Image (tube, rainbow, N blue to C red; front, side, top):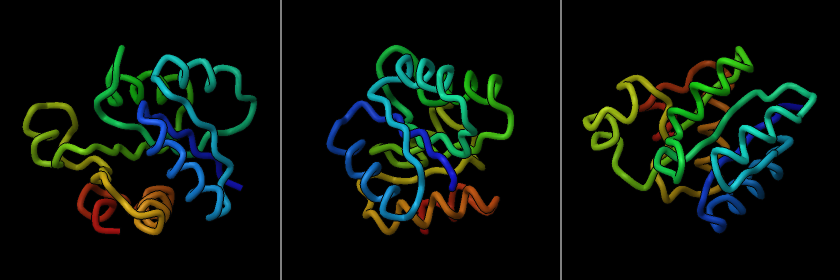
Length: 131
């Protein structure tokens, strides 16, 4: 069973993601902030296969969080999500152009497909956002 760490400061989005991913068979860890996510990742003894994180959050950005977690957990895949358009996020340097990205709002099915695509190594920005 694959494990996904969901990091989202909006509780309703975090709950939706958790329920959708658990229904798809994933083990889900969840955090309301990047700092909480770093603590959870440090304490979790198992493998974390995917970080699903909002781009814009308090304290540090999703990209900074991903940089920290990929340094301590090599091989972790990352899927970013945001209510801002992908072009705006990339244009302002928040993400690299070929990054896996999911536009909010999203349906549970869209989320599950995007996560699967990233875990399968097929989740480029356009593929994940259209999944």
